[in-house]
Image (cartoon, rainbow, N blue to C red; front, side):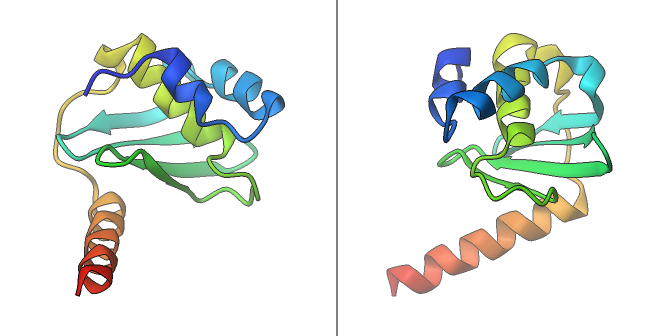
Length: 114
């Protein structure tokens, strides 16, 4: 999937989230990051270390931050990073916290289909 910055920021709930996401879209903001065929993930250092994941199937996001905005600035930042610097997200096996989330999403989708 090829993602542009414009597509990533179009998901923002408001202008301030888009601006904050753009600022977080550089590799130096991320302690770890990666990608697989199904997901993007990263750990962003803010006032705490936030775990961020993106389902590439539908661009759904989840972050461990307390924000009430969806997607949050951290998820937007990860999407911007993927669009501007794909090399910052090395291909690999998702960590357990990403796999678990993807599995829960798949199970929920399966329940809704039946």
